Length: 136
Image (cartoon, rainbow, N blue to C red; front, side, top):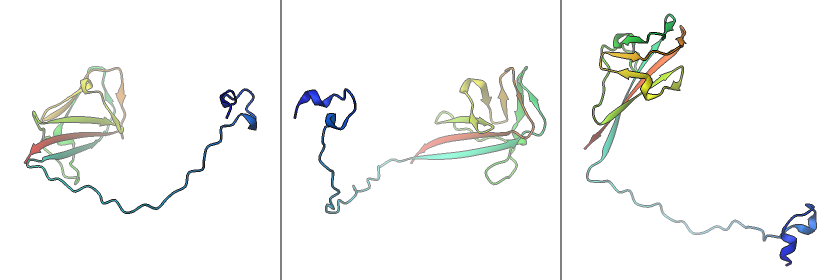
């Protein structure tokens, strides 16, 4: 085959490089790898807390939302957030969008939103996701 023809100057049929057809072939069964259970496993624990904003929240001066405004995954009211320090982290979602870590602070008693030129409107969902890791 002429290497000069590999470059398509005018995209015509003469400048195509013919490739052999690929055929699917049934090969013998390859078993999956065996499951290895480590001596010590890391187990995640996840707690989620939900709040639907009832009235507009102006963030010009920041805002603090107490934990008792939130409910858990089972719609039960909570009095405190479960946090996992130092083996965990917290994510905040406002209207289903994850927020930057520096935009808020979560303590066991409250969510504090830093000052920002914005408003969280009534009906907006706020979700706190607290993840922790335990070694067993």
